Image (cartoon, rainbow, N blue to C red; front, side):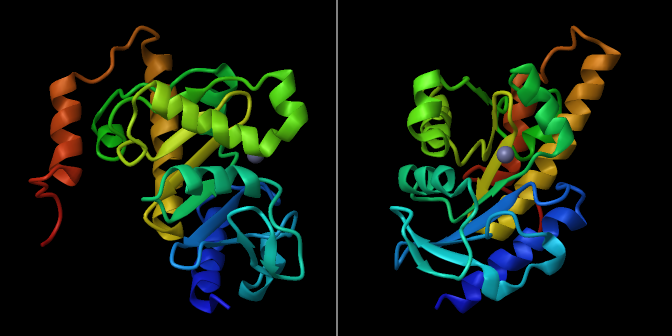
Length: 231
Ligand SMILES: [Zn+2]
């Protein structure tokens, strides 16, 4: 079942070590089939070297395993919360890529210092709040998703305009139209996080890029009159 989706989610998972975003088994990619309400996700704790498309696990939106011999990623419930909240997204990625993690561990939003960031993320990449003891004890992974959603809705941030978050003391989640685009956003996020860190080192009081520059760069790629790239 869902053989094409399994193959694309597998390929997207394999892109993470190729791009240097994961060490050992850290990180996971999922993709959703909206028609059937089923999610394909990496199995938990399996080395990328031994991963195959048929190891991908199929779960429903309540987290019940529908197909697969292995257990799904331990972060599955976080992915499911985001899919349920944001109907427009088709793929999700979680990594511990080091520069994004540095901002997460510092508990700070990643400021939009320049056009590389503004081309993909409209405004700062928010850092979600810490989970409470109760939230951790009751349902850690599900509540990680709840807190991500809260970060966007309380801050009135459009998750399509800012397809990434960093979870406090943890690391990044990114999303996109599908698993491939979600991985692409993870790669860009790590570069942007690195650039922002270097900017801070050069000038710890550096200002964000002017709003007019952020508007121009985001809108020329993603706005109603976007003109970047080829027709
Ligand atoms: Zn993690």
